[in-house]
Figure 1 (cartoon, rainbow, N blue to C red):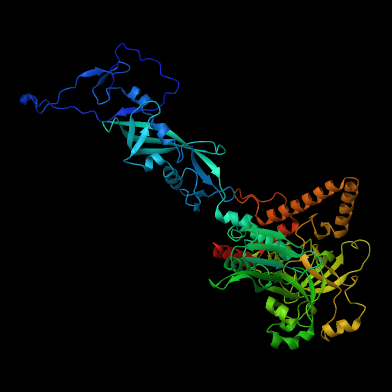
Figure 2 (figure 1 turned 30 degrees about the vertical axis):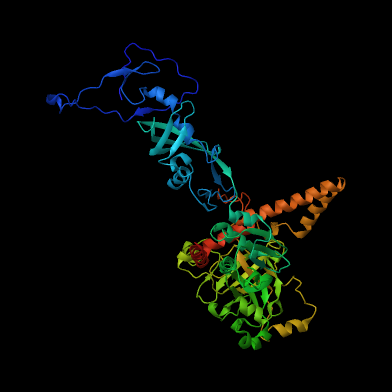
Length: 607
């Protein structure tokens, strides 16, 4: 409506005056029925002064202007009133950040300033839910506000950490016994309070899990299979969404779940990346014969094959008699010395000392985890040397076994260099097979330039090596093998035609890198560090020693959980310190397209 102020100056507003707009919406003009000639033309109503401030207004049932009606009827105080007369509250779970739906106990994920959260907030305003009933007397006046209708609503920006939600509402209500309709625009504030949801409450409560997945790799030295699991879980959030608790153990990890289906899905996901045997056992906790119910806890045991990449393994020839009964075996590699090239769902082997006339496909085999455990495990596949015993060698000469040319150092002819470079494996798209048999002459890096002792060997790295490359391998000529004092032990394991090589080449070093397996801290260095810590803490009190021990244990747990992505999931930040094994696993994913495709396929299946 229009106001005519003329020369009138309105009085000052009180301190508690609402900064809102007010409109009177029931003003209409009435035709003059006494004069038939003016029946179709409306006449202007006479203006009257407001009964409180004297402002000239059109006549209405309250005989008051909009400013005085705003002071008489405080719609904002009515909208801001909670169910019990307090503040308007919105409950949110601190852990999963889900919002409670209208005090029903159900929680759902809602984005900030989303339509779903807007609907949830509007349903928490009691004044909007009691349409058609009296809204009660206003704060200052004696009239009643009824029939409150929502006309428009919008979000008002607030600080993310203010724990407040603000809505700008445009409402229309009836006052003075439904004689006058007013419209106001007010801002309603909701207080956000933390309240734990039922799912998170079960996670933080004891004895709420129904299934546990025990991942174990019983290995004395470095367990690279556990590192592969850490890397796979850190890259896939969907795989770890159902884990309610995580505990590291001596030889692996324990993952707790609310049900057996989630645990089985998790174990099947892990079996894609590491070779493991899965067993399920159940334990009866309690039962009710009257209602025919029982509380059963399940344990999913995942025994990983204790073989890692770069391990030198003996394939016992006595396992040939167990091939038919166990349903497995390595075929032509039985009774020979083998090298583990890759571990995924199965273990990939290659002959460590192949014959010159063999085909590269005949020198490779795969071993399934079921066949490994049925054949006898470590008894039939003992580990001779691990990756910590690797030694650096320098390549002096390379000659392919199935090619008519050899690669030799020739600085004068550039065509030979181009030919040799074109036959080097540079990735899956290079068009060259990764492995090929070749005769290689190497020398120890420590003996290079000191003596003339060289070694001849046949290796599967023919398409990877060039003259002058640095390669890691096992120096069997100077190594002390387990059980070497008993000659009959080896005669029973190997074939009669097998000859023990002096050198077994394992991996080519890409450039000059200061980070190698030799730089990894050994158990001796760790023991010395622990002794130093003990010396420092021995003079302190017993309480301080207990606090330090608990702090170290908690720090180790947080570090282990951060590697798998269980910490800071909302921010999705990777840990700042990436171990050498994680970097090696990522490099292996780049070079092995098959393993990368299996990882992508597993992540899609978990979604």
